[in-house]
Image (cartoon, rainbow, N blue to C red; front, side, top):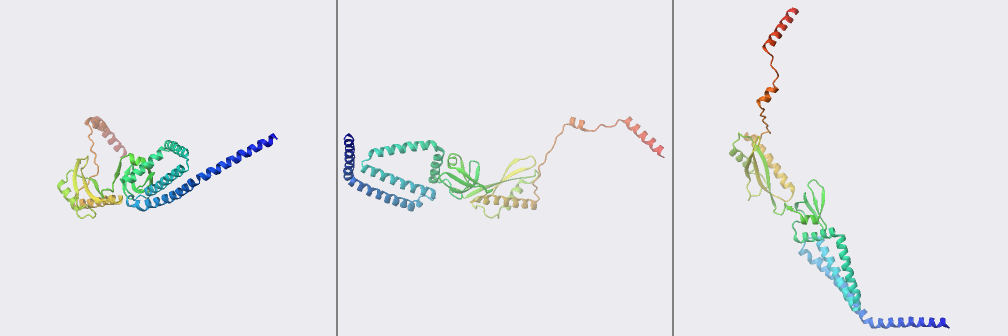
Length: 316
């Protein structure tokens, strides 16, 4: 009998619990319906927001990576906001608080664990927004020189003139000095040369400028200049400076090569000499005396002649 009594009590407790859950479900039924409507509306709003961002953001930024990032973040934020509303309607405020606390703790832990990745990520966003360079620009940064092929949210990809692809972390690009050779659309070429000391410098300047007169692809607003810079060891040196339109490295090295050919041809025609390196050695007289071979004494010379005469007579 005792066992049956305990079983009956257990069944009564279970039935009371089930009845209570059923009553709570009936009471919460309107809230569940509202929560379901909010969830469906949230999904639709998130999808709509992502589509609008993807459609209109290209008018502001040309970076595909930034557009995808903003669209994804917008989608996630709208979903989170809708989820929090759903939990509030279902009277699960404690769950919302726990979720927020958990997200904060997880974010803090991930921030410490992946701080380098986060720094590159944030630097990439700033680079995309500020746009100090774009794809196709020629830049130099962190001792790397090349053409930008891709700008992602983590790295900047450079193609060096010799063909190597270098992926520079965005944090280093953002923190260190950077030279953008393309942003001004033109670049100055500095060409150093030298002439002999007996050359007429006015004639040298005239010949060089005439050689550059009809050279193609020069910036018309910037005239070539010849500046004599120093008295060298075997020549008087000068710099030829001229500007060329610049979009790629070939524009620079090609113009410099053409200028060298023209100057050499013009100097040959005008009889102007580009000297070889010359070294003049000044040796003290005391050192020269030591290096000279010893001279024979007069008596030694007579004895040597006598022996030569006797040897000749014996032969006869």
